[in-house]
Image (cartoon, rainbow, N blue to C red; front, side, top):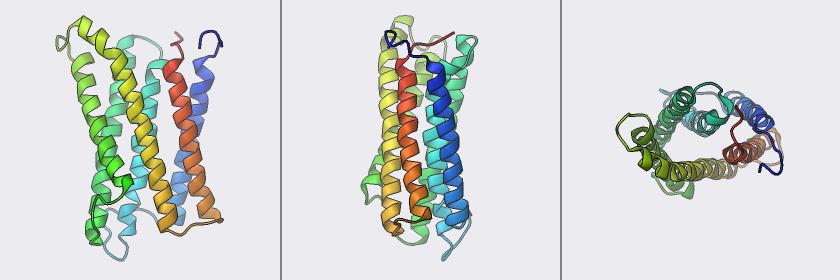
Length: 221
């Protein structure tokens, strides 16, 4: 990548703009076209409980975890500051992922639907569980002094980056399967809502690509 003389800055700008656009479309979709959010809603308004799921999973889990990955490349100053930002953003993403899973289980319990029957649900549980394990291992190796030797930290770092990237791609892929699933369930087509939902999917792919580029591009002080 050094031979291409590509700078990480414009890539992260595109990533941020993509995240903002994705957030805006998700809010329009769920608040304007899908009836809004309500954690305590009861049937027949249980769909408002379900709407919490895509909101926190796309914005809180996928987008925030992507921002956490990029934190090492876009935040200047001391390494300790970058590390703390990386940890904080991933902690937010972890809470969002768990909350999103709870939301969809709550919804399906209300409508008395069977749990864990789709590929999307399987991937979702695997991804959130993998994210949690990766978070714990990263905290043990890099946040607590004396928890791991310097040589062990150096040996684990490439695996931390690789596995973290894979889990992030799994999160994006899981979100895409959820989008396809909802498109089919709602019977969407060549209409405004269908275009918005498809656009969210395309923006997530672009976000994943830009975050991936920041991983391989060198850090610019």
